[in-house]
Length: 270
Image (cartoon, rainbow, N blue to C red):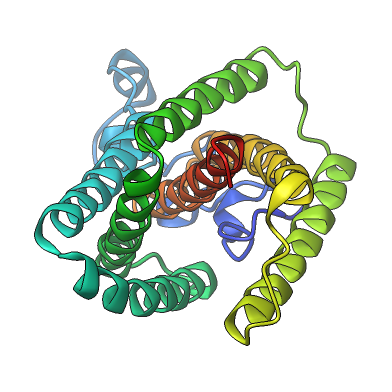
């Protein structure tokens, strides 16, 4: 079963078939003893852990995710504090477009690039910092509410995944990714209509319903992220793929946060 995660789908390392490890040995195997070392001596030695074999661990993913979120938050705070309203509006659209391009490049790049992923986090931080400041200027406290809602949703979905209440099956993946693609097409159409002045469909009760759909989809995509990370760790993929896993998580969390901002804005009056 190939990964259906839009970020991780191009990495065979995250497929359940395993990952070829060093010296041509498959996962779970190892190179033949060399030199004068006997099998008895090898068995007596402590087992090599993931850090010694260069394989990805959960800690690797956590550290890189925290690093990307740190860069994103720093860029967002700097944008919020340093840019006045006129410059903020001028920088917002370019940041959104550059962030989208970097997201696509990182998603389709076969080998993870930490530099490009950190660049995505920085540019996305500028975009989110500007958007958050605009929302906060109209709805006091909405940013804190959106952040808390994102954190709580992440925790709930992780608990549901770890307890196997939600099981990531092939059918689940196909249905979810079909829904995500449909939602993305709708969002693109709505963006074009808003740009050309026809109108924004994401307002009022209909906008609230669409926002709720977006939150549900983003939350479910988190379970795909968790599943692919677990597969990568179990398959013994190289440590460098922790960047790919972290990138997938950050993209989903950004999406979830923006959806919560929209919903809260509608509930607060518009």
